[in-house]
Image 1 (cartoon, rainbow over the protein chains, first blue to last red):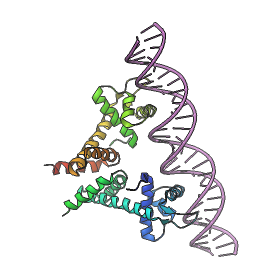
Image 2 (cartoon, rainbow over the protein chains, first blue to last red; image 1 turned 135 degrees about the vertical axis):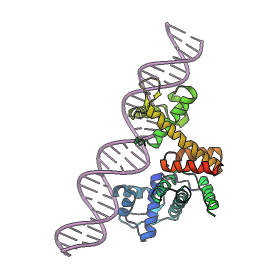
Image 3 (cartoon, protein in one colour; image 1 turned 90 degrees about the horizontal axis):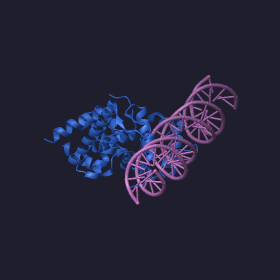
Image 4 (spheres, rainbow over the protein chains, first blue to last red; image 1 turned 60 degrees about the vertical axis):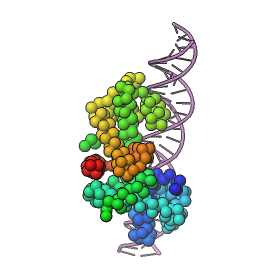
Length: 127
Length: 127
DNA sequence: GATAATTGTAAGGCAAACCTAACAAATTTT
DNA sequence: AAAATTTGTTAGGTTTGCCTTACAATTATC
C-alpha cells in the first residue's frame, strides 16, 4: 500500500500525535514526550522527520496538522493496534496492560496480510 | 527470566548460530552472513557482542561453542518462532513464506506471558 | 610447497534514535 | 509589564547495527 517504510519509532510518533490530536484538538510536543517517554528534543527531531516525509505540516513554533497521507497512516497504525489488543486481551486473556504492551510492539512488525487475516479471525471467533 | 535484554538483532544472530550448528555441527561466519543477509564483518561484531554477554565462546579464529546460557536463549527464541509460525500458518492461514516472515519479526517483541498463552491457545484449538 | 581462493578480523564511516545542556519563544504568575 | 515557568529548538554526543575497504589467517588447488 503506502511505500513509506516508516520505522517503528516514527509509527509510534504518528500514532501518539493522532491520539493526542483526537483528545485535545491540538498537539504539544511535551505531551508526545510524556506519552512516549522520550525527551522533548527527540520529539522535535521526529516531527522534522515526519514533516519531511509529508505526513504532517509543522513549521518552527507552529501548530501541527496532518496531511491526508499522515492521517491515513496514523489510522492504519491505530487500526492494527486495536485489533491486536483485542486478540491479546479478549482471546489470549492477557491483562489490559500486557495486552496493550504487546499490541504496541507487534503493530510495527506484522504484515498487512497477517493483519487482515487476524481481523477476520477475531471477528469469526467472537460470535 | 533471563535479564539479558538481547536486541532483536542479537536474537537473530544466536538463533541462526544455533540452527546452523544443529545442521552442520559447526558454524562458519560466512554461513551466518548468508542466512541473515549481512556482511561477514557484521557477524564478527555480533559474535564479539554475544561472547561479551556470555552466550557463546569464541576467540580469534576459533570455533564457536555455546555456553549453557547461550543454548537456553537460542532454544527459547526458536521455541517462540515455532509457535508463532504455527499460529500464522495453521490458524491464520498465511502461506509458508509470510508465516515465517511474521514469526521472525514477532518473536522478538512478544512477551513471555503472551507466548505461554499462545501456546495453550494453539494447542487447544488444534484438537 | 607456492599460489589462489575463501574466510575472519580490524579500522573507519554512516544513519537512526536516543540523550544532555543551553538557549529562544511563549505563556503564566505576580 | 516584569519575572518566572513552561515549551520548542539547536548543537553536540552516545549507542547500535550496519556498511566498505584492507589485510590476516586458513584452506584448497595446482
